[in-house]
Amino acid sequence: MPYLSPALNVMIAAARKAGRRLIRDYGEIENLQVSMKGPADFVSNADKRTETLLVEELQKARPGYCFLTEEHGAIDGPDKTHRFIIDPIDGTTNFLHGIPHFAISIGLERDGQLVSGLIFNPVTDEMYVAEKSAGAFLNDKRLRVAARRELNKSLLATGIPFLGRPGHEVFSAELAAAMATTTGVRRFGAASLDLAYVAAGRFDGFWERGLNAWDVAAGILLVREAGGVVTDLNGGGDALHGGHILATNEHLHSQILKLLRDAAKTAKS
Image 1 (cartoon, rainbow, N blue to C red):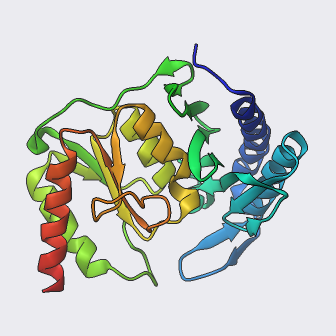
Image 2 (image 1 turned 180 degrees about the vertical axis):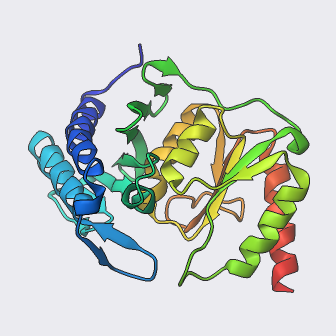
């Protein structure tokens, strides 16, 4: 059994409660009212309700904690040492199209360091959790990143810049380089689950640009606690707030980083 801190138990309870409501909403996709908050960036009533429920549940259990959320932004609290980072539905477009690949993602920072993380797909009932220095788990099963060392035997995942987002030329060059070097590239549309799949050894690596902290907070901790390496695409330590990320194992990290850097340079030259 994994170690579950009191804070992580609170996060799990909140995610499961929100997940039950999401399942009901998912069964009535055609009735959801959808608004647009940007080009090809949809947000549903379910998104807003889920975030409100999560914040309320976590505030009841941990009054005073701060929050960083997708829909409401920063929510201040008197306890400046703790902050929940929440994505209520990562993979909203999948959700709205009836594709059962989306997740609730919650990370917890203490003094600026990620200490607990949770990624929950309520459709598949897969609950990924991690505690700093205590490992990563999927439904009580210990997770380890894949051990592959050769790029030509590796399966990677990524995210594609969509309508209204910059970076199409760089991404196209990166994708072409990855396709020419690996066994395949997947694009599933939920960064949190891509990172969870790296932690579980399903993917050998994941990279993406144009991300926010709530997309990756829990996933960063999961991959690291599963023995993986997470950096930004410069090879630095700002994967949480830098807007871009590479997650893989220690054997492939330098190889993939060089592949992507060389491709990006080619695209910009």
